[in-house]
Length: 294
Ligand code: F6P
Image (cartoon, rainbow, N blue to C red):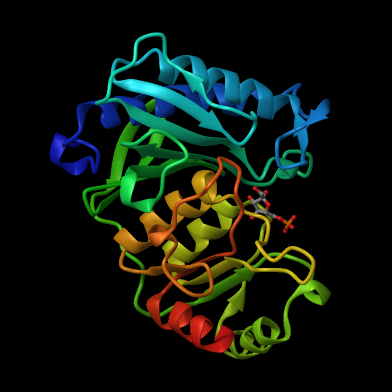
């Protein structure tokens, strides 16, 4: 039986309610995949194809989170603009979600996630306004990680409820795995040089859903990154929905994040769907990356 103290989010009732709702909805998202593996006509605001499952999960989260007292707005990777709650106040929290991270993994039936970020300033907001972050991982089990106030809790999600499995998750000291996105010919020479060194020391794990790949790093130690590319200097991942929440989790777990120059948590997006290079992992590997890119 877990206690309130085991929940990283316990000190903030609204934030805790957000994570309770996300856990409640997670089994529904998982079940909704059956029959929603086909593509919609449209694209998301970043120009990626949307699955019926992306749109369905987005609507489930929007409805549930905006219904909570103290949540003032909802933004997601799947929609252009913000949605505001009917009643708002200056004390509200603001939720930014990637409802189904890695949804191209639906067809091959590989892992996917839901990423959640809770800010205490209107969106787009930066790392200084990030109060809590977490993710659900739809793997062989449905698990969840949440960070708040410097603590990282891990849960299994059973029947829509969180069961604590680790009260203070931290990165292992001896890193084992690495995974980097983007096509190799698109990598810069400096980045490719760095990867050459990493390849000699760590073992490749790359699954194409950021949350799955970040979970490998959280579990085994190492580094995950989606770098700047020759034709896309800002890479692929979105700062508000992906970069900031994952940076908060990894940094609270004792690791580091970077956009190649500085912690992602020092950044504030100018617009909701702004992209950034993302690197997260053990301090030693993120530091060496920054040196290699100098
Ligand atoms: O959100 C985009 C995403 O699906 C991430 O989850 C993942 O890390 C990345 O794209 C994979 O991109 P690629 O197919 O280029 O490796």
